[in-house]
Image (cartoon, rainbow, N blue to C red; front, side):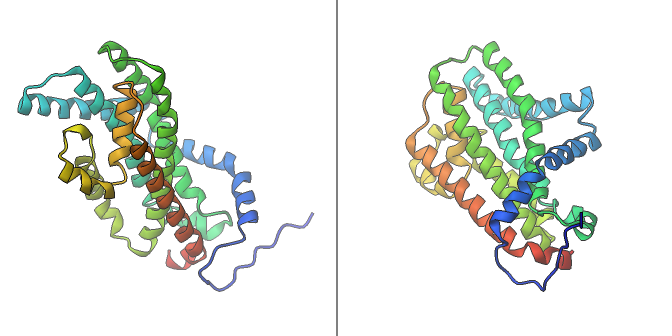
Length: 275
């Protein structure tokens, strides 16, 4: 059987034939999973101590922040620690998608130049890696939830759609920033400041209920604000999220994903020249 012939035409911005593209992408799903696992093994996350560090890193960070809150405010509320830990774990899912996606294309230069495949597989793999890192933290938070005596209710099943929204938002951010970094390489240097700013501007070190209405009206431009607030309501206080919080998070996630994917796919054929 003859091998398929790949024809490289001069670059012109525009979407590829989406049906064939998605079919090819779906056919490479096994590669995405194995590529993600290989990246984790390369960073020693395949060992017991490597997996332990996936949990200890955000857990120790939440402990440090909680200590600061205790020293400054003198509050040692168990709910506060549960909120801090839960939101920090979910925040790291999105932050790891960003940090992994920013160099997904530029670090895969040899693979892109020598192999024909849907380039969006690379930022998708970065999000899959972030998901692999997030799963152990769910187990740890379940133990924390039980130990500090946080409430349970059927409303906690709202955590599933909120988690899916967070995953979609992380994927959209990963795709968008991987494409931007091809054209503006300094983005990778600015990313730590961006993620740190999102950390402080989002309800992690504090709860959304403690923010004044004037400040809260400005937080509508923060895509993570109501997402993390909804997550805290559900997994910490066992309450249903607000309709506004869910819609705000979903609209932001869809907007980032659609804009990022369109920008990525329309410029994909230009990557080989830019690299």
